[in-house]
Image (tube, rainbow, N blue to C red; front, top):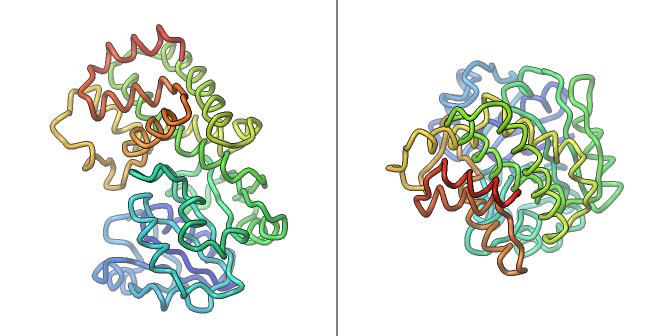
Length: 329
């Protein structure tokens, strides 16, 4: 299958590598022309996944139309802040038979829209052939072929089967769901929860606190699903509790690293600029947008509110966590 991966961040590179290993015809869009030239020559990205040698068969271009042309599957792998611009750039460029697969996690600042809602607004004719992939999948481990299991959601069973066959293999397991919105909600909530988990770790509060926090995070994920749309059973998916556990406690978690910084008193950096490990930490902006969307429907999300307060309102981490636990999540 001819596949376009749009975005050369860690996860985009990892998926492109995986798909090349599956013997697909893969091209990756690299926004920065200098990075693209470096990749073409050295088969490495100059900043991302530097320990991973990219497959010789992987093609790259900084011209979006060249990458998309003739593709049967288009993977949108850019941060939430760049998703709308990318989808606008795809107008009149997507082949009629192509499936769009989203892997962007979070919720848009200002509009409070999830990825599938942004796509339905900009490319409404593609909504029926849209799929969404999420799960506990650190990029470097995926690229190195370490065993990984993810959730794939789509409203169309044929799309589910087709995309699942593209990815599935002995080292990459794909469970299929129809609950796109639920998977998107879980993906947004777990990133925010991971920031709070990082704060707990950074403050040295110990395993007892982390275990109790996991319970609160799972409760909040279920509450958010019930109010923002989604099937409560999606919490039990790889893209639900699985991704929550990895992002909250995995050493490579960008969002967890932001929480550790907060615990150490690093408030000098503007929240709009906060990132970790050189990649965007989606939970930062999601904490603001999820809280604002929840308020519209009269929903209280204590963890999301606590993280938003620490990031944007200067709330003191220890006292904020005390209040969170008093509320019982």
